[in-house]
Image (cartoon, rainbow, N blue to C red; front, side, top):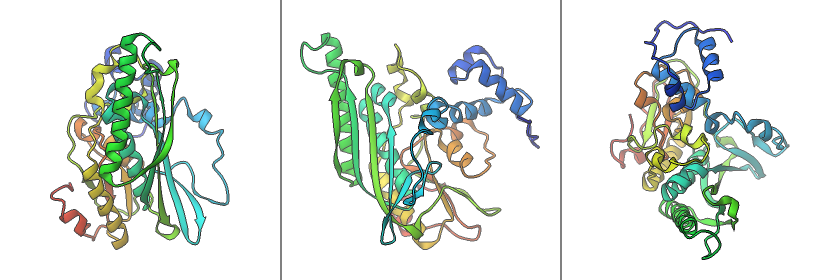
Length: 338
């Protein structure tokens, strides 16, 4: 791995084992960072590697298993590598779909963890140009029947079930997409380790699909959606860690969803695509602005907090350089572009 020269060399951070642990970076991974940069990273750079190399963003331990799944067919319009998969369903139409787990966030904060799981996959669908039509879910919990386990464990499992179910239902209802079905099972092995898998499906014309790619020189980047707070920072690394004692203390790492704003964002994005106001679009995933820009362009961002917040009601637009990327859906929802 050859170091890449940069015109601006940021100030290095004092790297300690504690700092690396806070960023979930191993000693081996830090050696790779040093080799790639040819110097000690800044705090922002360390944060970028932390989120982009997390399991949640890079699938570093699960990709070997994911590669075994079939991804190619005459009907596959878009396989792995984009916000959602797309299948040709005939007559010029395509089906966009996405499934995502939100296990750890749902354990720490059941309602918001499950709700933002739904919000995230809905956003993955409509940033491809598809209008979401349905949500489904596959859930696994520990036993909730009295006497099936220790009373405290049963109470905790029951609390998780209520929070997750309410979060999924509440977000979908507010957003306006029905939950058509799913499956729920209870086993002792899921006590303290729930599995929350959410699925979303939408339809799009094959000739109207949008991708997370920015082309052209000098095009502006517009950050669109809900206001970003401190909730959700380090969400990618939190979601990549194992369940352990004290995990509940990371509740602030779970993003607080806003389904009403995401509904506005849906309509704004689809309108902007139809009017030609944008040439590319990328959702704001677990690593926030860092993730969306790294997947589409080469960013030059400095302030740590502006690089890493995640939000379930935000995305990046890349309008043509000469275009004023405004639409009626944006103007009716206040000042939410920046």
